[in-house]
Each structure stands twice: as C-alpha cells, then as structure tokens.
Image (cartoon, rainbow, N blue to C red; front, top):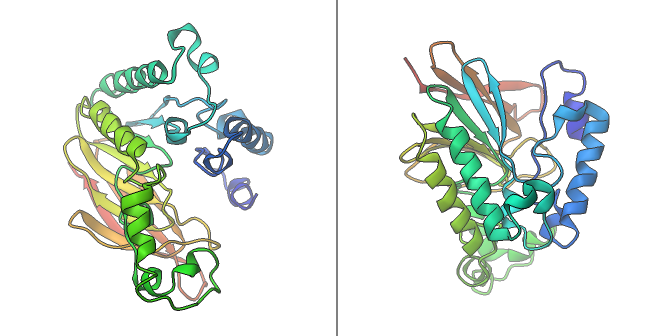
Length: 288
C-alpha cells in the first residue's frame, strides 16, 4: 500500500513488476497470490499498472521514445509450484520446459526486432548482484547469525555463525540466490536471449534491498539493482570488479534516454538525516 500511495498522485505512469514475495514467497498458492496482487494494484492505479499479468512470464513490450521496455516475471521461471501454462501459452506449451522455451523465443524475438532502439529489461531477479542473493555476507552474519531471523537477536556465535553463509551458499543453494540451480539456468538463458541484441542492453532489477550499478558483459551492458525503495527493509552489499556504485540507503534510479540514443543514469538517495533526497551517483551509461 505504501508503494501505491507513493505513486498514485505524482503524475508519471507507474508499472508494478511482480517478484517472489508476490508469488506467496515462492510457496504453494503463488499463482493465486500474484493474481490477487494484480487485482489490488490495478484497482487503485488502472489496468496498465501491473505487468506481466495473470501469472504469466511475459515478455510485455512497451515502445517509448527512443527505447523498448521489456517486462518479464522471473519468479514465474523460478517458482516450483503451479504456474500459468495453458492460460499463458494456449496450445503452444503443455509442459513447463515447453513454456520456458516459448517464453525465450518471444523474448529473443522482441530483443532482435528492437533494432537500434535502446532495450531496457525490467525484472525482479538480477543477473548479477553483490548482496546476500549474490553470496555477500558481512561480519554480522558470521558473529551474530540470528540477526537474520530478527534484528534484535544479537547473540554472539563466533565460528558457529560462519556455518550459515557456508551452508546457504554451498549446500542449500536456494533458487532465490544466484547459486541456485534453477536461477543459474535462468540467468544463462536470459543472457543467451540478450546476446541477440543489436547493441548492449540495460537490465534493471531489484530483489536485493540495496542500490547497485554493475558493468555487464557481452550484450548485457549494465545491470541495475534498485531494490531500496523502502525504509523498512535493507540488505548489505559488497563490491566486485564490476561495481560502479553500491550503497545501502533508501532510494531509486532514474534513466534519461535522449533522442540521439544516449542514456544518462541518476541514483537518487534519501539524505541520511531524512530531510530530502540528493543525487548520490550519476553516469552516462551510453553517450553519443
């Protein structure tokens, strides 16, 4: 409700993109949950405020001045329970694997047909991240692992606490993390589809509750992780060789796509004293 309140009267068009929490936290009943979320959002903001619809993966294509926005639901791919097949693909796909293949065909076709338009892909799960979903754990995770359950559980467990990061990243391998088998396959397939782009693509996501600007590889020009829109939840973040910017602070990102194809990025953060917002980072992603 806070997100709806934030955008309801500001003017610009808003689109909600579902993720794992909307799919009942990746549990059974996810498709019903995401449809209820869709109904809730569209009742407040209109039918074009929620994409992809009806528990389908997309891609939803929106062509705007100078760029093509492709919206996909990555939780559809990762979800282990019931998900839309016949309702999303009709007779084109009767199994999950057929549906994934059809989705990738459609995504590849929309990327290829964009031509010289700048392609921006919006999804929930990132292709890269240096937050917890990418394997980053700080000293608090090692010394006070119970704070993962509740912020106030500051019970020191040195040595034992280090088992949690190791267990999560090397044993459990949740599909909500980049280490998960299904997640790794999804990332591989999405990158393969993106490789058909005429020029480097911008991939914008959330999932980790921080702000990251990462250099991509190949036709993935940049990965933008903008999951810090709420003051109620944040996640730690590290740095990699691909990091241009990484902060844990409430904020969002803004892209300006110019008529000549140049793209300018601003990372807008809340000031630490809470008195307003400022541009914490700006960069020409593509300049002509």
